[in-house]
Length: 336
Image: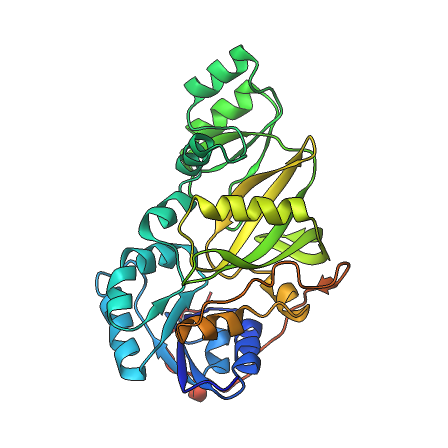
């Protein structure tokens, strides 16, 4: 299929390999516009146009984004950092009115994705299987007394990301100490021991239905996610992904985490963006970039859920970018 000239605006940070995949799939039909607050972000060197922007908590940040979109005639926008998803979602209708496709959820869905307790309550009310969760010691204590939950349990920040602050807790004293340490606002969850898996899902921006799903199990993990994974297929999981998407308003790429219990899948969390291990899906032929291109042109994608091989293994490794300081967009960066 031949596409007219396209432009992507992507805040991508270190994810240089993903930009390489974008370029390969776009096959010359457009250009990549990348931004970051740091002139030494490696992904900037894989883009056609690059811009330095303020921190996302700067009041002028969104206006900077709009200026770049207008200047570069951007047709779609995405990000790989969680806090910026909420900014895009909040301004979703404004972006659409300007002819820019935001690859992000509706605002209400984005808020749920980044508040794990509110997501639990919402999914529980909708009858979607998810992990038993408490947001206070008082509620957790009542759960213990009722026999709903028992030690060990799992604790993590209510709106955290990148596996920061998570861990197994074996006693009341340990749980109480974590709540009082002031580092995070915690939730307490049932410890799931039946195994876990991930799914890279593309939710069509026209039908709002999942049209691609690539599921994988972890072989090895590092801080922030898996770096070695193997693909598998299970129609029960594909059906559950469709059930999850039916009660939310997602758009574009999503990274979903699941646990198994008593032969059933339970949703752990959703990161409504490209996941860190999406490279596995792309390498196995599940090309979200072509699906994005279709959506930009108003074409509703047909389902390719499960159209990949099982037992494809990904082994992630580090790459580097070498350049002269004079080739950087700015020499204003700190040393440690």
